[in-house]
Image (tube, rainbow, N blue to C red; front, side, top):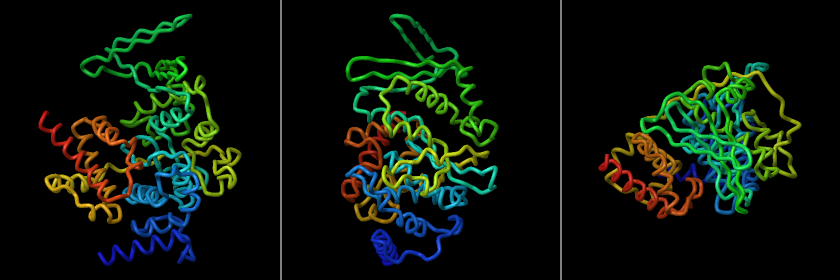
Length: 369
């Protein structure tokens, strides 16, 4: 506990601008979680300027620290591109927890410099969040159609879209579509055939990479994201959304952000020859720890320790994923008034209550299986 207290004081000092290191490392290969946290804390001022009132820079830095520390390939990336991704996720207000699918830190190799870089990649759920924030959108969602599904599309004066998924889960993907309903009563949808999606893939700089999301089990998310971006033609677009689109999948650096608008300066963005690097499989250790503790609700003090809450809640989420109950996890959070983990206050008692609610729901779901 004494060591944890010292680390906590170092973080507070760094947030206040004290004891800043004279030399900034090129990457984080040899950095421990505490070191990563301290380095990110140097940019707390920039991060906090773009955050909503209920989210603190310290909490964002803690979440980012956990994501970076768990992925050795990200630690190999240049520090400036890691910082750029952290700043972009903060400006957009998107959760970096990989399982939530809003924002990803994706390591890549720059074909020109041969250096490892961290790209800021927005997930399709992140795009949904950005579109909902316009204030004019009532509902927006996206799905894929598979072989065996019932799918009926009519265009013309009275467009109609009907999709009934096959009970067995269906076969290969054939279409992707996105639907938006406005608060004024209007609506629009966009449907892409497989050939349309493949054209979008062909324009991707990482289309031939073994590690690209296009070529992994995450391919469905890329289909859905492609439909959402196409649907944006009908959506009330904000400057935030347009900037997000331009900077999506780019290795950003702190120098690329406009000091006045706090947004990415689009002029600074240039395409590179890249090779995406596959993130490692989720660490099984947190899952085992959760299994050992599931009968014992966490104490508020335990969740105050550095990374304690994040590790615990991600371990529980992994268990929800294991029984294919991802949505149930989000439903519990929604029932408590939170759209994502990042919105949960830092209060230890509240965090303990959230963990307990999730654990109880998980237990009920497992008994029902």
